[in-house]
Image (cartoon, rainbow, N blue to C red; front, side):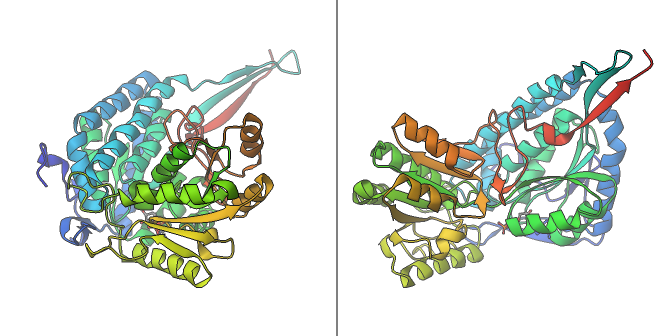
Length: 483
Ligand code: ADP
């Protein structure tokens, strides 16, 4: 990796404005999923070090919360600008530890820096209310205050983007934050911390820690100084955090698994639907929580859709994310490869047919061929579980109500997509789908101006938009009496 600014690649944790090692010197190796080589190491902090980071965030909170919003906004804005200025280096670091193509990595960084820009602006618009009282001698004042110390846990699929979505609204609201990135991708998090420090984020306001997930999770959940936990990751870990955090009645924001349906109706623009499916399914090699997981296609256009999709999939290029023209990087690890293999084997055993891919790629490691299967049904595992890999399973349906019922037949409700032209159908289906986010004639749905989050077991709360800051605010009602 040749960085313009090598100081962005760090091997220490960032706590209370200091760069520290683990007290016992323990480290975690960070590997490049494209070839297994070591990219760097980060400290494996013990639980006592995590408690110290929480103490620092707690100590920093009153002064940060008391800063005028305009000042917090200026610091966040500066952080945003520094990320843009360093986007090429950040992309190199991201691709080295995560595997996605360099252009996609840079896209993630620039696009998600937008959450810092957005929340820098929103910081200044945290309004309260003056409510007409039922009694003449009282006034009802409502204000919003930061919740306090926030602990964030982020996944490896967007090593950069998942951080700005959480740190942006938290710091804008006046909260302080301790972040634990995924063990696979901590280097991007530390690079962001370097830039936060340069932007003028005061010590203790934003700390980054790494180590064994469970002890850190337990400290976050049980330390009384932590007011809120914000987590993006699997539903299983989300449930565990919710249980552990119950005793302390901690505030929770959870962005959990999805199982996105992608419905193609017979009145759809088929080429647009194929393009949308490609973006939604194969971006990040299928490793996003809003990736199309179940593609439902209406009878009359089924064969044509499959043919067009297969032609596009044939044009995908697998390889190291740093190679020009590569569209598909490796999967994050062998466990991910085994999961897609299991889903393919299960579907094949129950009668589905392979149209493309279906096996590990000749590149070795965790590279997997982009795969299409037809004749997929609701009885197969892929209908129930998120594959999180490049498998496009194509289901057939005949009526609108059948498609809606199949799409909603899931405990998850994060994203859903459909392609149709008839306006009445667009409204009916949008109303009926049980998902927090609906893409109509669009395969890309996330942006900082929109509320991102799930219904059902896909989570709690929303990130982005004017609503995204609310999870970091408490409402306070002051009854002014005796007037
Ligand atoms: P995945 O299976 O895709 O890696 P996870 O939910 O396991 O998804 O991981 C998402 C994030 O949650 C990562 O930062 C991971 O280290 C963290 N994590 C996993 N288990 C725990 C836990 N018990 N406590 C706290 N964090 C955890």
